[in-house]
Length: 147
Image 1: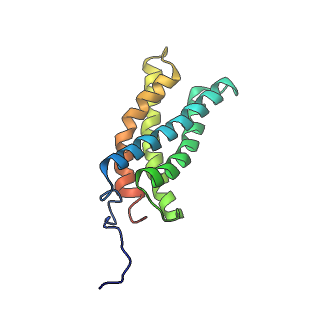
Image 2: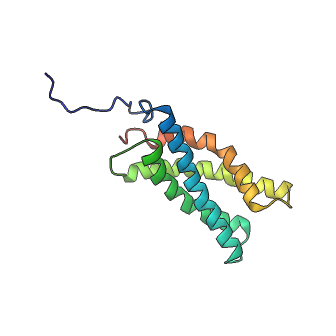
Image 3: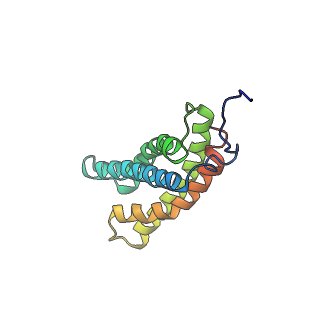
């Protein structure tokens, strides 16, 4: 009888391979909502309380949402139980900032081409655009080998 400890069958390049789809996608949705809520709250706080321009407030919101998203995705989306590492955060940050640049460009484009749009509407549109790219980067880049 083999006395070796049971190990996950997840491959080093796909941390979600063995997760039940409902658990995985539910975790992705919840993690995204956590990050989006942080981003939206900081955006509104920056505009209403500190009088920042929406583009400046959004940069702060993105930064805070990135850390919240990293911690939520690693636990809720990919069910990682290992401690976070600097390498994982560095990979996640590179992917998140690339996605954030796409998100920010879409946000700015909505405000530029539709000046009457509410900043939260622009945030929602931009977030939808960036979601696909964020997921692929997290699944096959940021969290590979983290389990």
